[in-house]
Amino acid sequence: MARVTALLPLIILKMARIQVYIPEHTHFTAQIPVRVTDLNYGNHLGNDALLSIIHEARMQLLSSFGWSELDLGGASMIMADVAIEYKGEGFYGDVLHIKMAFSDLNKYGFDITYHISNQNGKDVARAKTGMLCFNYKERKLMSLPAEVKQKIETKA
Image (tube, rainbow, N blue to C red; front, side):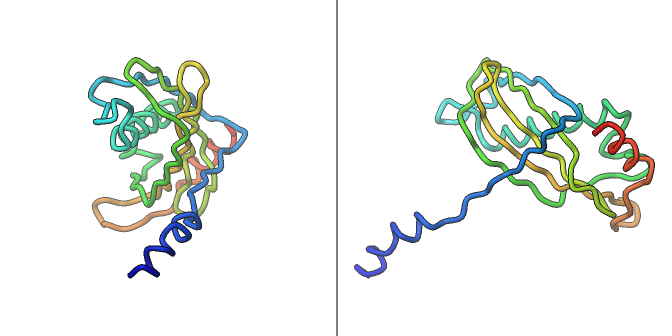
């Protein structure tokens, strides 16, 4: 047991960290305030609240294109994955500036990246959600509509 305990710090130091790549282009910027209900026991923005804020920002992005998560040019959307790289703390009263971009378009969907900073420009987080087109009636993936792909590529 002493040998395992002695190796533990080495294992922790070698853990891979998530790195979210943020493209240079931006499709939309949302500004969302941190509410008191977004705070955790550390008196800063909780990870669960940040995921909800990202969801709200995504809804605003889609709306700016005339879409929603249930109507994306005839398709609906489902989240396949999410990655969040924390860079700093968010506090009650902060206004988060969330720069979003579509990236990695493919046959079934795309990624959305989120560069999140506070009103002073201090990085709070970087995130990525993998979004797929989904038919909820048939419970299966569907292709990214051509008009959606064209509109995203035109505004890039």
